[in-house]
Amino acid sequence: GNSVTQMEGPVTLSEEAFLTINCTYTATGYPSLFWYVQYPGEGLQLLLKATKADDKGSNKGFEATYRKETTSFHLEKGSVQVSDSAVYFCALRVKDTGRRALTFGSGTRLQVQP
Amino acid sequence: EAQVTQNPRYLITVTGKKLTVTCSQNMNHEYMSWYRQDPGLGLRQIYYSMNVEVTDKGDVPEGYKVSRKEKRNFPLILESPSPNQTSLYFCASQGARSSYNEQFFGPGTRLTVL
Image (cartoon, rainbow over all chains, first blue to last red):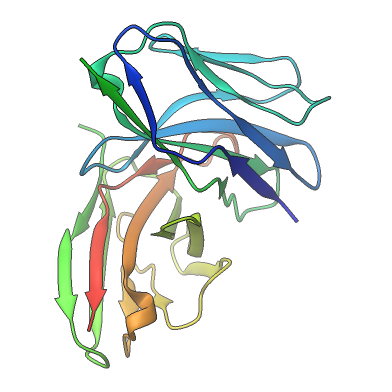
């Protein structure tokens, strides 16, 4: 089956620190990979995605590279801000005929202190 | 504004009392889905719908029903709620053009069953 493993949180950083949140996956087939972000009291928002090996997704200063050889999709940001405090979910989806179910990791809470 | 709305946002109920959580999207999306989010488990798909009158089970459908009588609405029905259905529920929708299009999530409904 499909599964996503993320590092457990919370991750606590000071403002302007470098962020890495690890994500590895197992999948039957060739998945697309996603990072979603959930701000307090809100639904999930797509942060970035990559659909094939070696693709780099990027948005709002966040980046993640699809590494097929290590089955990983680690999220990075060079300088975090207090406003980045949220829960981050790594997810995958294998192309199918209709179900389109996303398989999520358990989420990593990021707390950025001023 | 393109959005997915859910009501209610918070609900406390008792075992066995039927309830419905509504979901509506204004993007004319064919695909809609329900997920539940539980600590340490990420999000798991309950049911999904490819279009009006077309619904199917996800990973955790037991104890839930859905209907899709109109394109914009996809209510989640708990005929006889039990405490193990206490969770955070998210509705999502997606357009049909590409299976890798972004899924848009609602703000969530926090349900407590006593």
